[in-house]
Amino acid sequence: MKKTILTGIRPTGNLHLGHYFGASKTWRDIQNDYDFYLEIADVQALTDNFDNPEKVRTNVYEITKDLLSIGIDPEKVHFFIQSQIPEIAELTVFFGNLVTVSRLQRNPTVKTEISQKKAIFGNNGESITYGFLGYPVSQAADITCFEGEIVPVGEDQLPLLEQCREIVRKFNSIYGETLIEPQPLLSKTTRIKGLDGNDKMGKSLGNAIYLVDDKETIHKKIMGAMTDPNKIKKDDPANPNICMVYYYHKLVNNEENIKTICEECRKGNRGCVQCKKELIETMNNFLKPIQERRKYYEENPQEIEKILQQGTKEAKEKAQRTIKKVKQAMKINYEEDKVSE
Image 1 (cartoon, helix red, strand yellow):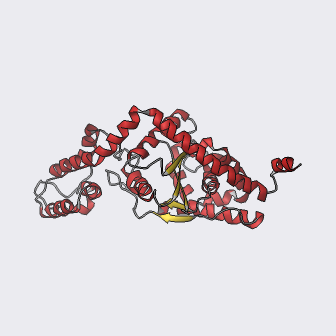
Image 2: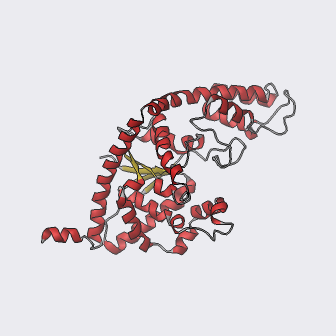
Image 3: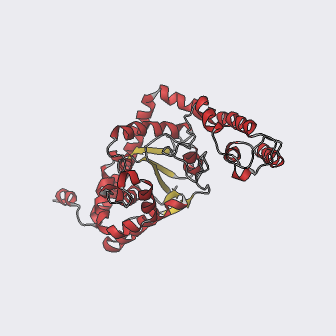
């Protein structure tokens, strides 16, 4: 039997190249190897978008179209919407008794995200919400509700998975061996840098290329990308390793072209404008098949509804089996007592 894998994505915006190379490309590549549950984590998205629910709702459908357009197959992957599985919320409540507030506050990933959201939570996190602080507990419920044995993560997400593992061990030590302790599937790709050289690509930073970007948008973004600041004239030699244009060539170009670009750059035989124009063409060619597949789903929104409904139905059936075992272990399976009477 295939092992069960669980992963999720927050519907707060369209997929960009950071999402693609950092995670979703891997999901596509391994979808044949696992019983794969892919969560559209709208509840988690509301932890820091609670005042903009329409944004989250719209992006549930947008992110699903993006995932389908890169080749994730709904015949192989269970797409489901987090909020439509009440068993997750139920399990989150149970898990809330198994982790302390201080442990959540020490979680490195949570601390980093609080610092990145100063506008929402204040400089010292004094306005942090209960929901945001507790989202690692909700994530633990996501994983265990579907008996996730494998969870794809980047290194920055390992503390969240370890939090889940701790909760599972605590639950099993109190109530007996009931839940599966998940193992990480560590991403082989490091975080993708932004066009401005920032270590993080993101919408708020304005440095991302999105899978839905049209040719005009891509042209504008790439022409503004950071290059070697020491290259003043067209024929000045430059260091491609500090040039974001070369960085993106390495993501979407072939090895032969990449080698030529690097050599010409170092010798001063390549101007930045020429290099950017070549990247624009290559990037458009890379995105073309993705955008063509996406167009089909844009023209057939009923397909998205059907995929999400079917996947959510399958996920709910799995979650119901898990919550039944959990309640039996916790001695709160009162409905079963009524049946036996």
